[in-house]
Amino acid sequence: MSDDSDAYTIVAPHVITPFERRFYYNGISGDPPELLYRSDLETKPIYVPPPGARCSKIPTKIPNGVFDSVLNPKWDEIVAPRIIASMKTHGIKYSALQTVQFTILQDGQVTIGPVVIWIGVRLKTTNAEAVRDFTPEILHILSDNQIAGVNVEWFEGDVTKLTGPPLLPVVHRTNPAFGLNHPFNAALGIPVARQTADDGTGTITFLFKEVKTRDGEPSARVLAVTNKHVACVDTKTDYRDDGTNPLPILVCGDRRYERAVADIMAAVSESVRQATKLSGEIKALEAKKGTAEEDPQSLRHLNRDSEEIEEDNATRQALYTKATLEWKTEDDRKFGLVDYAPKISATVDYRRYTFDVATIDVDLSKLDNFKSNIVDLGTFSSFPFSLHFSRLSFPNLVY
Image (cartoon, rainbow, N blue to C red; front, top):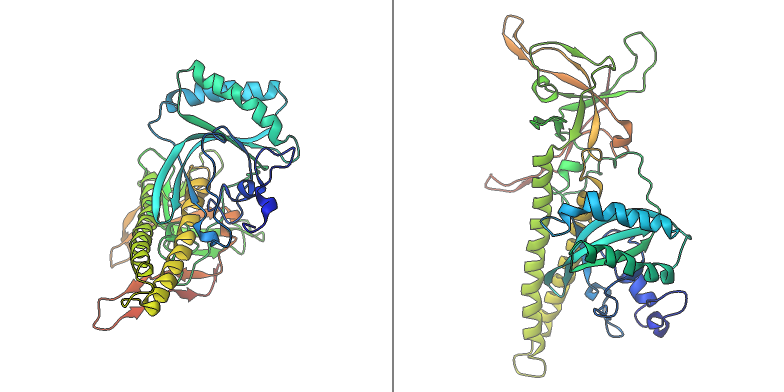
């Protein structure tokens, strides 16, 4: 598209070029929304690659939450309600309203963009001119509350969210997301936590399908096995779900979720560091073209390595986006409800084993990518030779 002169021509009712509409949100997902309008359009023009430039040079964006900004204390109670009321008055049918701050990666450099009020409008209900004309109203609301340095951006799209996302597929060990997506994937060892203030955590041992209910009726339930001390605060009494006191279980407690996101971001940052280093080496070799020190073979290798790093990092960035947008809240991470959790006992038969078990009635929408009881073993290299295990698979269990 970058070679097409029409890509840089504004055609009514649009107020930005087709190129900017399509690529402004490059990287935030596999199918990013198109930009309708942004409040800093006149002061900050988008980077436009020269004809023939690789698409990888287009800036890549990663959305992040907004913390410790002047907007935070006034957003929920003052600013957001006023924006919503004003949009309703002006007939703007919004589908999403949130604050976001983008990490921007370009040519191996990382920058953090300004705080953005990010608004989605329902499909085919308005146009760029209408949201452009309404944007000063939002800026006026911000000014009234002594809030400066915040941009407004609009995109078109319907947001439909009935439940949280399904667990992610288990990927091959060569995939750049391998290991990083484990907290959110369908392999055994899923990190779980009870939805309580103490954030009690553990893992899933295995899953099995219930064949019949307690009453002998056919059942479609899938149950997960974990520990009593993970599922319940009270470990001294039996618990059986009767609908009066449900105990929700989450994929990742807050601390485990934050650590998982930090691990992904660290991997992204390391890839950026590598890309920056390679970029410098490539420029140094390009400067030697036509001299006695010209080294075309090394230059080809470095360019190939640079492309692979960019491709791998795009995968990690997409995972970061998914983790921060689709798994952030406790509602997103609900895994199921505790079904049965007998009290912990240390008097199981003559061996005096500890009996510490609980079953979870799993939300079936979480299991779209579950194939079988797979153990994600990661990579081990503590031997004189390297052993690589990606998974062990067991038959689905029923009872």
